[in-house]
Image (cartoon, rainbow, N blue to C red):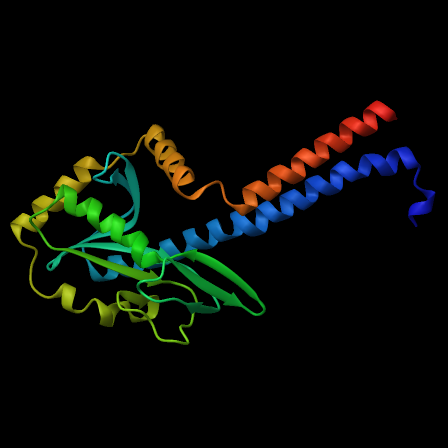
Length: 234
């Protein structure tokens, strides 16, 4: 099949193969998880709005340490301000409260990710810095079909159980100090493009560009080198 392709054309196909491979890595490692994450956040947002009258999603606020942090959800409840981190995962989830990393098992593949309880702890501390005198409650919600074969760590909920898990938070009425704290947080929310860019830069500085980005950059570089070589020698 390939013997009929001129050698010059075959050489030019090499950069295209590298480019397509890089796109496939980008799609499966970054674009698909991001889309799945947004779908999960929307599902949790809808569930929270059925339980509480005031709910906000995707908020960038000061982190109390001179930077910015991003909250998936913030809800006003009679028990205090509720900070929710959403994860939309499938498969088996292995991890304990004190572990820095948790593991997702999908068939024969394993993927490590940051302990979401630790991640949400930083969000909780950011809200406490803004509102030190009212209760701040944190919860991590798994929106997908994840299973926890070794038990679900404390502080986690699954989407289907939110009504039961948050029943205590619905009792009573919102006090004036809690309502004022809610307004304080909203007054500190950053919506400008510079804030989102600053937040992303902070994430890269703390966690690096990620394996997918390094692989894609490497493949792109190899494609460029190959194309230049073909042009020069061809």
